[in-house]
Amino acid sequence: MILSIGNGGNTSWVLLPEATDSTIASFEAINPPITGLNFDLFGRGGRAAASVRAYALPPVDSSADCYAWPRARIDKPVDNWRVGFVSGRTASIRLDSIEVRPSRDSAALAVAVVQTAATLPVGTDPTFRGLPFRVRSAYSFRLDSVDVVIADVIRTVNEEANPRVEHIFLIAERATGSTGKYTAGYYSRTAGSEDSVPVTDLLAVLEIGPTRRPAAVVSIEYEDGNTVGFVERTGAGQWTATWKSAYTDC
Image 1 (cartoon, rainbow, N blue to C red):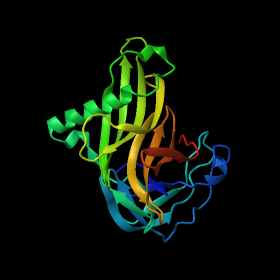
Image 2: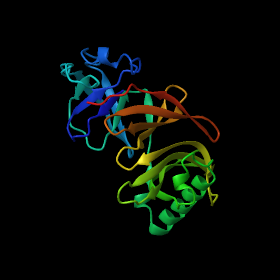
Image 3: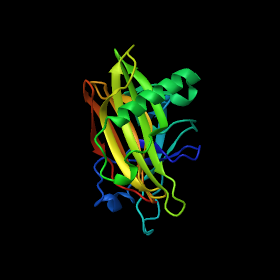
């Protein structure tokens, strides 16, 4: 998998699934075996480009006191892509953002997501109990007769000296055509200082492998670094975190 560095150019990181937090240092100086491979590139809007050639770049400076993935260059700049996979291995799922919906539909989706978040088990941090939820982001798509929403729901404590936030990354489903709250299939909760709490960012939703299993590709952003992971649909109304990359912080 390649990951956009996010500078609007054609340079990317090469994520190697066999690397772990304890072995990532040994992968920094390698030339990843991707030269000449074609990649399909994806973002939240679906497939951004098909069959883009990638070439390994010289290793980064491994003397720095941090860890990074090997780098690659794609043969042409592509806008609005976040992740790439070897061509033919994945299919795209286009996401609809709550921000581009008509105001009435957007409000209804936000209410349904908040209602779903309110049904989750109570978090261990009592600071946020009883505070209202707010939808920070939400993306929806359809799988056959099921509507799926992936959202980041937050609660905040606006203390000037110590602002705190709780993030709930939520994947939920309901039957197409129904109204009201969704049924949660997966969630993760983080809470802490506004400047340091980990935040899960949705990169793309794809159908992966020969079975075309739906999977959300996410980046978990920490104060000084990040990891990338998959949350896959493992059954009706069930989503499971199946893989997480090594942690990098360069």
